[in-house]
Amino acid sequence: MSTAMIFVGLILSTILATASNSWLLAWLCLELNTLSILPFISKTKHPRAIEAATKYFLTQATASCLLLLAGTSNAWLTGTWDMTQMSNKLTSTTMLIALTMKMGTVPTHFWLPEVLQGSTLLTALLISTWQKIAPMSLLFIMSNNIQPTFALTLGLLSTTFGGWGGMNQTQLRKMMAYSSIANMGWTVITLTHEPKASMINIFTYIILTTPTFLLMALTSTKTLQNMTTMWSTSPLATTTMALLLLSTAGLPPLTGFLPKLIIMNELVTQNLTPLATMTMMTSLLTLSFYLRTTYLTTLLNPPSSATSATKWRQKMIKNKTMILLPTATTSTFMMPALIP
Image 1: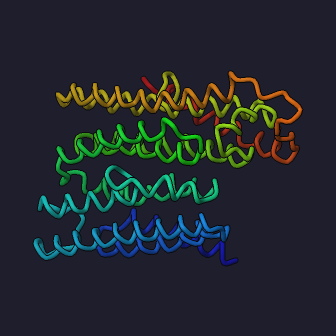
Image 2 (image 1 turned 180 degrees about the vertical axis):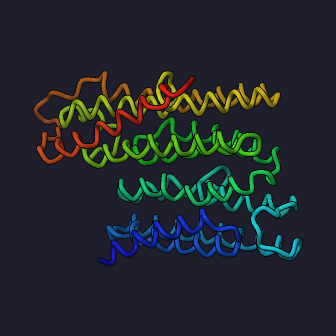
């Protein structure tokens, strides 16, 4: 009962934050959202989970302080808490830093890999997807008042550090965290020029990340070593996982290629071709570790020695996977078919 109430609070706080028009109400909803997710992070009662909950709380509290500072300063300068009245450069930049800190963007990204590593796979799914909706909605509302140069710098740094950080990771949750950082870079880089493209990118990422985390949870896959033996649990789930990873990396003609194409087109239209070229080059870093993971999943034979640990095929996991696979497959191939 208590878990259901906390989950309802998590959903309501996000909905109210996205529907609010006042910075004060948005700050209040984001605080409620932070307090609602903390019990899910610390539920396992493991020291690493407690550490992750503490890091998440301190980071979100710092971001909330910056958000309240920016909102109060803007209300003092303009006489209103309205989100659309952010004409001052200092307050709009401070607000951008606060909201990107909540989502995990460079240079305030260091908390995200550690928090995801200390959480369960389902909690990591919530942090990577649902917890980004409210801050992203607020950024969409104030996108006209964000300084373009600052947003472009944050976006390029995020794609670069997200790609570099995920290169040597063996833990899938940390790899997905750095993938989230890189994806947020793609989202922020076009926020001031074409905010609708940013929303398409973040929601495409959510659509692709959700079945990826669910497949990891259903097959008890947490490391690259587990990926090599995932075939023994469910071959069909393994194939779908490979498609999801390649789609998230942005390979055509899969779904993840569509938002990157839109963003590249927008950057070139705005005469930012050098920036578009650098962003595409940084996406190769992300592609490299996704290709490595896909290779371990599908093209590498699992160990066949008698001492190797191999997961058994369980009917319960297989049945749940069969329910999930149509959704995952549809989300992987859905959007390219919509391109005119």
